[in-house]
Length: 99
Image 1 (cartoon, helix red, strand yellow):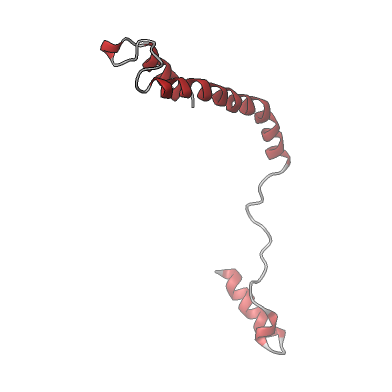
Image 2 (image 1 turned 45 degrees about the horizontal axis):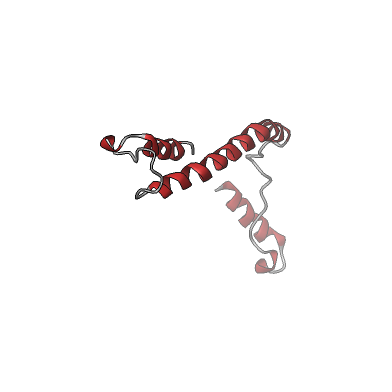
């Protein structure tokens, strides 16, 4: 996120023979460079500070709440679709669980 700010600063500071604006913010694209510098840098500082302040907290949260990669399986079939007996329902759920 800092690269646009660096490029806008370079564009504004470089002499015109090198493709820059020679410090002239009122030239064409000068307002764009000033805007990118004045808005981009605070946004970058804000994003950087969020990462610095909350990275340790996120790490602690991940350690305290590990991801369960094998959750308990439940049969997606409805029991009402198999009539009176549970045998057909159980057999079909076991067949699906094996897949």
